[in-house]
Image 1 (cartoon, rainbow, N blue to C red):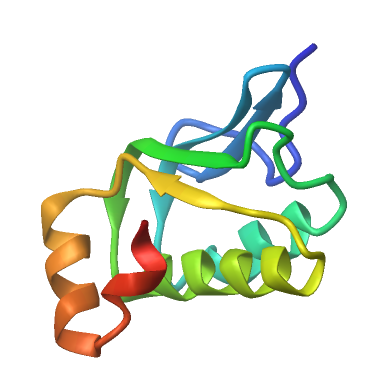
Image 2 (image 1 turned 180 degrees about the horizontal axis):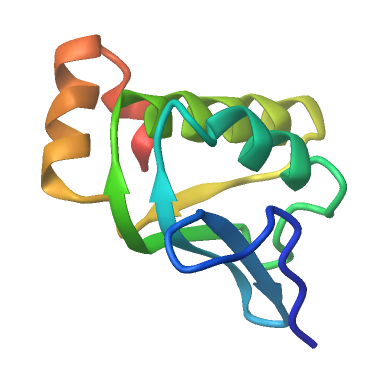
Length: 104
């Protein structure tokens, strides 16, 4: 079963939720970060504990804000959450911001 809680479209970013967990597809920038995160709140965190961002086609620092918000949510719910597939430039930005420990 596929479910796209964060909208859809050619460039708009969305989490694709299915039995294998969460995958992000599309863009994640300042323009859509709040919408993407708000939509993710209506869906249980992935059972496998992994959010895969390898399908993200374009991102800015707002993507890191979404990742950190997801990690805070997981901590609040007492659930483990791992982040996979972040691009090297986003990981480098995480190092600059001092949040690289939240990107695993």
